[in-house]
Image (tube, rainbow, N blue to C red):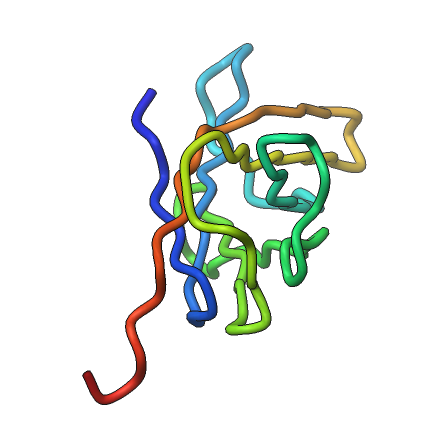
Amino acid sequence: MSTHQLFKRNDQDIDVVLVNSRDNSFINNATVYVTILSPTGTIPTGGGPLTASYSGLSDGLYRAAVTEAFDPDPGPGYQIKIIATTAAGINGEGYRPAYVSEGVAAGS
């Protein structure tokens, strides 16, 4: 699994695609939360939990907005925690490795 790059103090999105592991169908009706965890397991300022909204007419795509309030120490070892639930009882939790880089100032 590739490492997701996040930028300190920048508006950015985290995209998640949900697929039912039983029949490989896309899940378009879930409640999805995304939380960024530091290498020590704490939630940095602006790291969530964030609600990921379904992207209409997509195949299971959910998007969580991270704002410029996200202000962790740059470096490796971060995790993106994803929790998804549906009314039908399809529930899941997963983690994606992440790395935080210094942000780029607007207009640079």
